[in-house]
Image 1 (cartoon, rainbow, N blue to C red):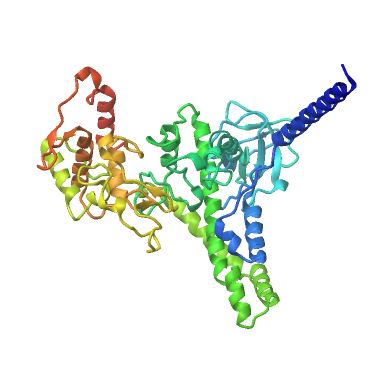
Image 2: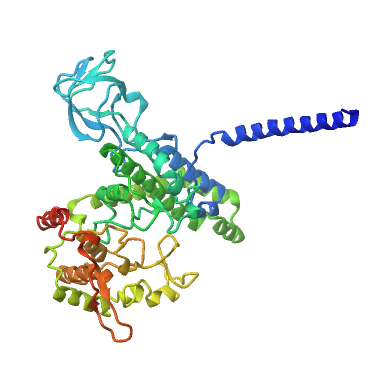
Length: 492
């Protein structure tokens, strides 16, 4: 080997070594786990820095960080594994508890806390639970240094529901819905339709009236069943406790987002960058504006407004969990005979319901609204022809001929879509506009659309020739009959 070739080989070998080392370094840097952080709303950036700091302070104090969350008892959530009051005769070894809420199984090693105030205070910590005795009393070893008095509030596994939900959310949901629940996970840009943004407290597919929030059961059903026709899969394999924890964490993210939304809206009129600029042009100094904000924050003004925001939010979510918020048909579904289907078809075509404006005359999702300039909830023109949801995403009306219903295909699911609308979308609520009998006729018509046979130009609406029986699922199956019997009994 000549000297020049040896030098070339040496340089090449050195270069390869350096490249390998650099690759290893890049790989190590790339694999470094970055701490999870909550992101802010876009309009947060419009606030002056001091107003941003106030929003940060509130959110951190009452919600914490993604890996260090706060259990804020003012929120109407199931935060703890179990909650109750201490019974009579507590000793340092055994504490009897009258439970008012059992969300997770009480396991050895869970913490017990005597609660006070609106935030979970570390000074209230009791000790670690050793076991439950045969009577359901908490057994402690080593013995307690602080024994609760009769009637004291007791939490077992404080915040454990949220902790469990956070882990499940990170594993199953975060890649689409994002750390903050803002629908900006790493997978989200590649999905259509877009994942749900939880931060406004709006969930599309519910069994509640048009003015009510979603029930926990609605979110649980979406998690367990998925959303047909979208990338939201079914999580039926989750245990009941896991589903409950995931629902509570999603609600927690939603409430955090709502409070940020309200805070930013409250501050932007006086303390946005544009508002500050206008005020300074009118003669105020920046320091005067800052002093005004500090006085409002440290006085009673901002705290009272924050209390109003939280009370309103908590009240709306609490009311939505009551039975009165649930849509309950006054009559059971009538037989889907030719007469009911024909009545439903006429209602579908009527100017009163005007279903054809979006879904089209044949139910193909090609109504005139799909190629017209429509308006958003603020009354402003949308940027492009077609329909948009509350989050600004373009959406298409359902093609009823496909027989795919994203909110569920049970009769009660379709009835709820008609009665309460689809929240956050242009799909209106007809509950106060039409009788339950009429809505059921429309449901029967919708079910018939995939089986219609139409002749172009003559307006004919004839039943489509049926396929061979063995090639189609039996509509009169025992499962379907059982569901109908349940609904007739009022359990759906």
